Image 1: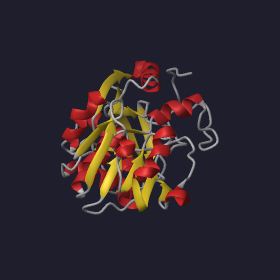
Image 2 (image 1 turned 45 degrees about the horizontal axis):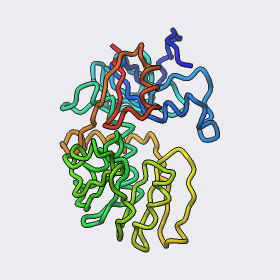
Image 3 (image 1 turned 180 degrees about the vertical axis):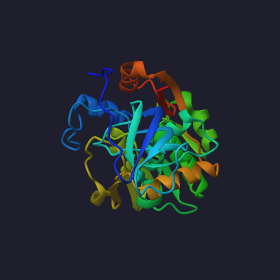
Image 4 (image 1 turned 30 degrees about the vertical axis):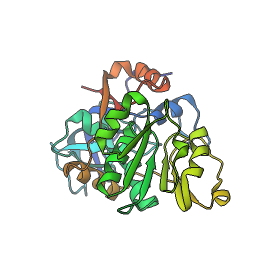
Length: 296
């Protein structure tokens, strides 16, 4: 169930920042948490405020806070077990927020941190993408995949991405050298890829092993468990773990400030329609970028 309600304001503790929230990004993981599908991985307590990232204006700072001031526009990414971002006023540790890039509006900024961290960590930390590498990115039109395509191209990789045919032109415009429409083509005919990034799981994961060269790297970032066939195909298989690391969050906004990537907002709904937002995500109706809630 999702319902709007009043809650007590969180106290402003030392090292924390109070933020008047203006927009919140909605991610598929929000729907999985709500539905109880991740109870073994993320033992949340109910009631739970959803929302993994968002943007707003700093209204107060606790003792010892540095780097941000009252009036700053910020992007936030609270911990998975903490209060989420779909609320009027958030109080977060200063490590979970960074200044908003000047070139992004609030709704774009609300769609940046969680997808950005989910793109940065697999490519930069897990796979260590280098110029000239052949990289296959699944779900290249989504919130995470679209940023991955832009970053991998920036890093000098030879980028192939999968998506629906309806999104092929969009993904090519993000910088993919080759786009494979999975509803018309079979990506598993590819060979000699250095890295595959799996944002889908299931049969897509199973068919990704054969496209890698021996010694290649399959990086996965999905909630459902996978069957590790790395030894069979002579490849490394790694699950990229996403954390609320402020250094990484700063890297994410720096890339946006430099114009390397820009988050895509597929649709904006008012806060009162959060249940509708979850329905759209569960139906697979959001195929480009992120759905955002307007909290104003």
